[in-house]
Length: 185
Image 1 (tube, rainbow, N blue to C red):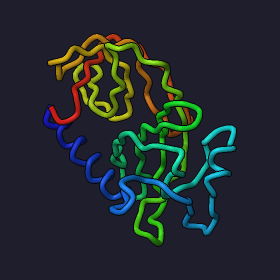
Image 2 (spheres, one colour):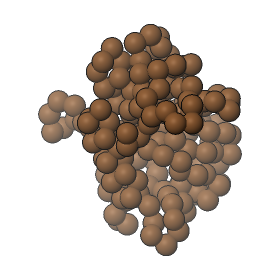
Image 3 (tube, one colour):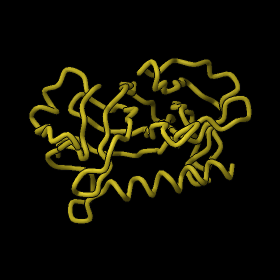
Image 4 (cartoon, one colour):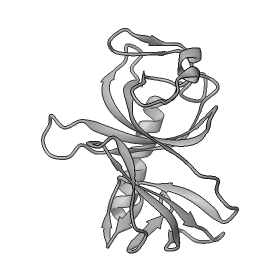
């Protein structure tokens, strides 16, 4: 699970790069590299978040966790991340493309796909970027796992999705052969 540890370190680095030292999180008016400003009211009133460009979240949104998905194949490949966010409409996971760096030094993202997180039972957790499918780490997988207090390795998976940047959706995948680890284990 050394790869999972590396992904965790990359996630922490990305999260730190996205946080304001003064505000403790990714919050305030959002702006884009193209100069389009998305105000908190516009963000909140959007029917879907797909297509919104942002470099920080309005105060009514909370960044819970994230995971960087390294670009694949060639230097021109886009970088993506998965962000677990609490929105006025509930918890979601967003697949974002990282398109630029804002004048404030933050990564500017475009929401490419959104997944509404279903209500979790007391024994369930949402896990991103640490799941193996048939023994191979797949950073695109988001899963709901059954957790026990001392466990760091989760085999009972209740639901799983794979973020697909090309189709711009989270695709339901079979849970057979999926095992996830707690970040940092």
